[in-house]
Image (cartoon, rainbow, N blue to C red; front, side, top):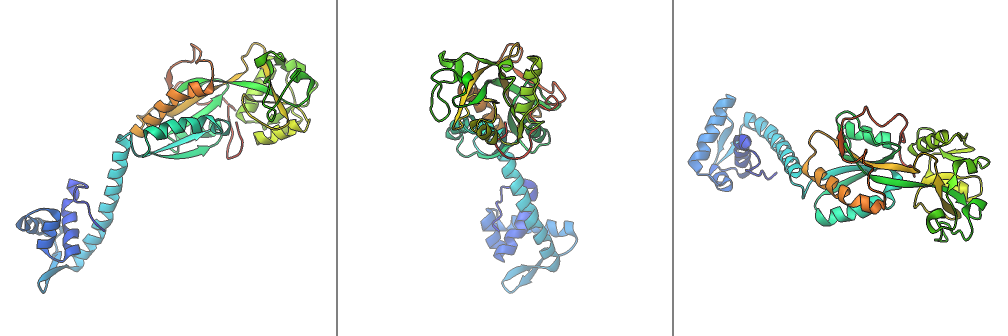
Length: 355
């Protein structure tokens, strides 16, 4: 092992012992360390006195470690290696151009939004390593609180933050009704995910679909506890049209496949593409048909590379969302405001096309 003699001043005597063990000569060790030979000899004598046992033995024209010297050198090698690793980690944390960031996000956000934002980040900070994780909102926020993630990008019904966490609302993501192609509510001239055409009311070909208009349609829902299911249930209750699902899924792609097969409708974030389906604008009554996209991190002073990624996400995602700017009562950063994501908001766990 090559010991970097500038790793930490308090390890200097141990580094000197290791240099002597490696070279077998005090003179050679002194040259390697860049110190005068008499200075090194005095330092080794002081170390031996502190230990209370001889550390070096003369062997011919050179020297070797004594039994006690070998015990100390073995421990010193491990200690120096661990300290050097700790110093590298500390330097990476204070250098925004290096280090590691652990980012979690919901699957539907990772298909397009996250990769485009990370392209910008990589161009600015190519030496930062990113560890990416996907999951549900509640699970991701818990991982930030537990120190397993540095940042989490989640989409929820209402913004909220757990104790010891800070958050920033980046914007909103519209929600749409997903119908099978050819459905009478899709409007004239509809074109769906594979036809690249009308997305409902956006080009005036079909008005928004109210939840009451879907009363006779089978409801394809995400499983209970999933963020999108929580949002959909809340909108239906507020519209006076609560529904019992005909199908419950744990994967949004499966829900899209069921819709394409003509087995019902579902509610999805705007922009998802499933062959054989059509997106139509949703009229959610008094509530706006949207979910809030929120960035969450620890309020305990994140390392420099984490702050750098947070700043890039804050800069790029609102535009990539194509969303309306945050509402006045949501704007700005919050710290430790609530006890966590509201019950059930985004309680997805594990992998899959979860939203």
